[in-house]
Length: 229
Image (cartoon, rainbow, N blue to C red; front, side):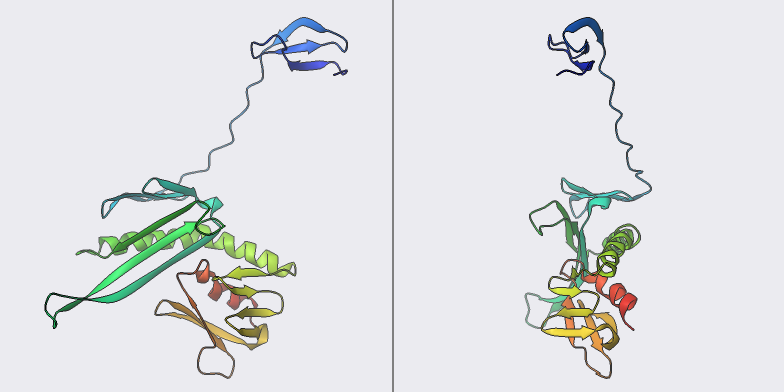
């Protein structure tokens, strides 16, 4: 240490002491306070209640469920889907259809990094449906535009991006499930029965299907719409 200046006081106390280049002096001063980084605006509360016994919260900047939380600005993948299945009653002729809702956001690596997951069956009212729709709307407004922009930036720079666990998009086109399509071969997409279906020009049936429960499958339609010719 040769340059004169304010350094940590070697005598302790948490202050700074002036070093004149050859020896410590008697001049001290308080350590400057570090400014805390500005907090992200919370915005309007989207969900703040117990969903079938589980405390759930979401606003414009964060989502939390059962003690887990994640900032939306840190989310790297999102997935949400609805499933319906029959439940057979005690009598062989009696059955009901149960609707299950799933909403998850998180970071990579999948299932190891922070994530927030909410899954519940539809109750006797439309309340659960409304909660699910509010969370999906939050994702579409706050999370997905950023993920789409990041995906487009990678593709436009000549790189590739993975969507839907195994589907890769790049400057030349889209590949996945043993299928490869150039951008001028992509006809479009549809979302039905828990899948994103990808269509090829001049082919009636879809050539690729990707489950909505795969991370970022929901980004496939807007990405393909952006690049297909």
